[in-house]
Amino acid sequence: MNTTIKTLVVLVAALLLAFTLGKSIYEKEQLNQARTVANMVEHIGQWASQYRGVWIKEGKGQAVDLGSHLDTLTVTLANNDNSVTSQEQVETTLDFHLKNPALIQREISDLMQKNQNNTSYRITSDKYMNPKNSPTVFETDSIENMRKNNTLEYSEVKNGTLHYARALIATEACMRCHASAEKAPNSVRNLYPTQGYGYELGKVAGVISVTVPTTYSATSIFSAFDLLSLLTLLGVGLISFWVMRKR
Ligand code: HEC
Image (cartoon, rainbow, N blue to C red; front, side, top):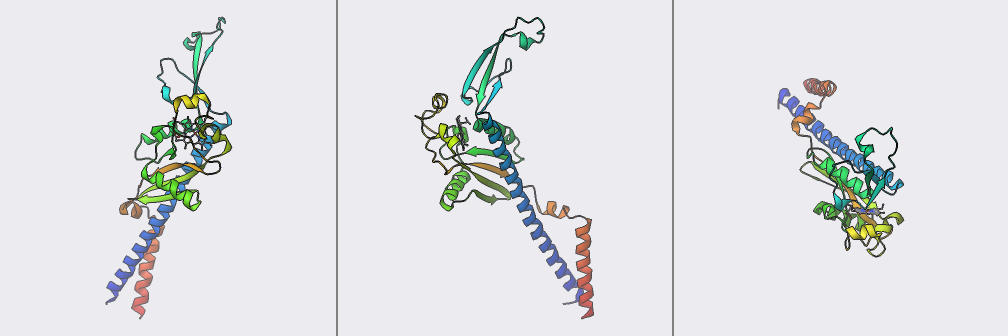
């Protein structure tokens, strides 16, 4: 083999190494991104739980998905006050709807899923209340896997897309609504008479499932090489050329 060929071989090997390294860094980043989204979803849930759900005011003429809230409160305002000027305040009644934490998480998830190229999430359980939240094959697998291996995370990469699941553990607070239909508040039982019950305290009840679509290709990995890494590569080539000439 002459020196030029040897140098080429070393260069190609260095490129392959760089590519493999780049790919594994990319996949770790994808996993971290999924974990960040799962953290955010947990915090949204905790935020809403602090208030035992959140009351949303129905805007005038705004359609509300009736199947998706737990309670409605109509408030009558005493509007004898002449200082009231806006149209809304002139109305004497306002409707409020109670959204529970899981519902708030789902509504945000619906918004994120509208944009297919972005990272999105859903919350799901094998014992689901709302059919909109029924689990996919990956989600069913991840729940089974976590229960079997006593773990809190599960992930798969398919065609570069990362599917990540984080366990939702049934706490005392969850049992109020998810233990059994008989024990659940009327508002929940009326909406979901039979399904979504049977959670076991302290056990995996469901998952936050995050999808991080692939954004890399061979070109995107190579285009991520900055001047420094190109110079390093050039350096490796020159050094190997020099070493081989010396032999
Ligand atoms: C006040 C009652 C209530 C409490 C408390 C509650 N949930 Fe739910 N949960 C619901 C309702 C109602 C839905 C259906 C929401 C929808 O329509 O998307 C739901 C949905 C879910 C879902 C999505 C799958 C499904 O059943 O549709 C998961 C997972 C879930 N809850 C887990 C939990 C966990 C874990 C806790 C405790 C941290 C908890 N829930 C506490 C009422 C409750």
